[in-house]
Length: 201
Image (cartoon, rainbow, N blue to C red; front, top):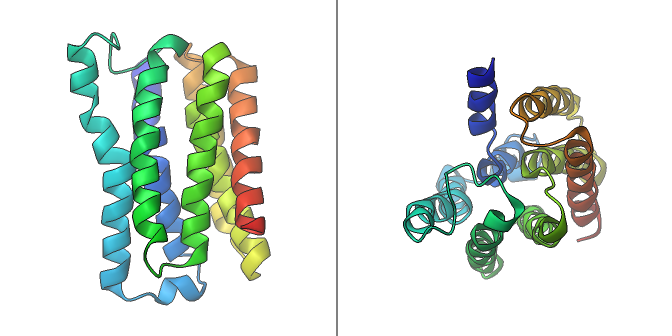
């Protein structure tokens, strides 16, 4: 059961959330779904590199410098430097997206991801909040935000994401990575930040 919980945590790693969010946006049945395949591919690559690949490639260096003790980055203290570096890469991606004629919804989601990570960073200084649940809550907020802003029915995505959030939350509890308060607060803060950014950006 612990192995399964670890696998679930890997599949829905927080660094993959922005890429998953872009997938949802491109498959939301809105005007953004009609972007040419070349443009979609470029955005996928940009988001994946800046929010997943670059932060991931820093882990061996952080291990070598003994800034972190393992790839799991379990303590609040160990999270500080990795989060700062990840924020830098996120800002880089947002700058590239912002400097091009890309949909405001995509820019809003990227900005929401940066705000979420920034809030997580400051909370993490004193308390270990669940970044997994923050990310999944953000996806729920994204789906609700798109539904309200563009008047589309994304109930299937919403139900699926809530179901996945429950599974991931249970997995994090099973691994003793967080307590229930850290999981619940991460989820609801993620929903609030992304939903409000999507609606008012």
